[in-house]
Image (cartoon, rainbow, N blue to C red; front, side):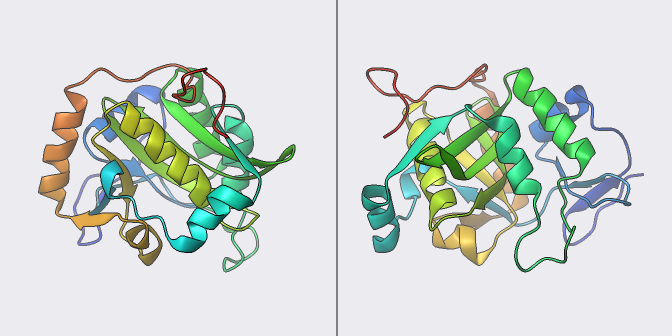
Length: 222
């Protein structure tokens, strides 16, 4: 069933096959729903977009980047990252999450196909933060992030921005505008503007396969 709502809900139902998911992203649509609901497909207006060159790094985040002993990697622990992202936040009811078992399986499949990617923040040998999303053309569609130590997810985002900027990505899709993403430099743009940006990004080949940190010696981010 298809219809439009002021919040950006476009369709209800369907399946989470890899082909359907990739086609949805190419159209600026993403799934977002909870256990017990049918699959809900969204294209919000306005859309939150982070242009890599406009990332805002606060003074406290700069300190975390320098002084907290974090190490950041790409595509080293995708399934662990999405599992952490699925855990309820402190302000959510116990058991509440939109990352259902079906969502988890679908994005693990996309990761195996080289389209979904993770960024991991480590402290020692412990995974303490990270994020995951989908890459098509020169666009990265952020899906979720988690943090169990101060600024660990933001550190992952900074490193993601540096990586995609080096690959000349146009933007990171942050989906729904919120104070959190706007404070990091994201902008709320009209849906039609987002779709034009998306079309320009999709005119380029996809940076497919397992991602590596774009450093001279090929080592993970410090």
